[in-house]
Amino acid sequence: MDFDKFVSRAQSLPVVLAEYFSAGQKDSLSMEVQLSRWKTAGKIIKLKRGVYLLADSYRKQPVFEFYIAGVLKQPSYVSLEKAFEFYNLIPEPVNTFTCVTPQRPALFETPVGRFEYRHIQEPLFWGYQSVTLHGQTAFMARPEKALLDFFYLYPYEPDEYYLREMRLQNLDSLDPDRMREFAHRSGKPKLRRAAEALIGWREKEREAVRSL
Image (tube, rainbow, N blue to C red):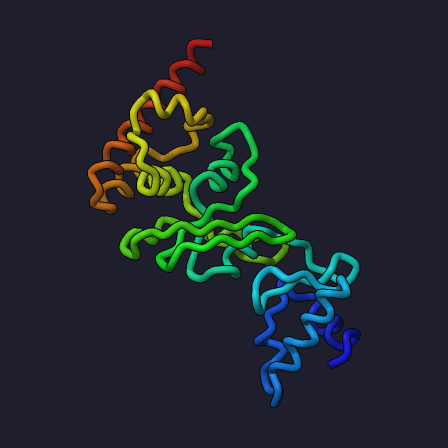
């Protein structure tokens, strides 16, 4: 396949999957060789083996990193610190797209971002929703689940001292009933403690705002 024909088929796709273009070909290796040459020539960007983006000058679809996070490792959803940023729960941006998966952990350093996947037990792989931008759908933890995922995966005790260190903000956007429901569903005592600590911290933040 020549590059012009490749571009005509690929430029409307959010990402380029080698297996899609190899389908029906007798020699799928030749497609991989072509992709490798186009990467060297700067015409495409490699995200991982078999997953590419067209270079900016050829691409029609804008890059939606949250969608890419779901493509690089399946199943997965964005959670933890990157979800905190998305929901404006913390004051600073996060460079790494942090995700959880019931599969093995992984890390992908790519030209469009750093994607880290933390392992979570399969019975805890829920509590996310779809987010669509530019016609591309990504999976994002609900804010309550992102916080519980954080305390599940890190050894920090969810006490008032650590919550202050996290510099959480806009906690009024959290749903206390959903937080308690998710914590109960997890079956983890630490997450039930985290839920109550976060709800208590939310009430303190609301009281501080009312006193202004």
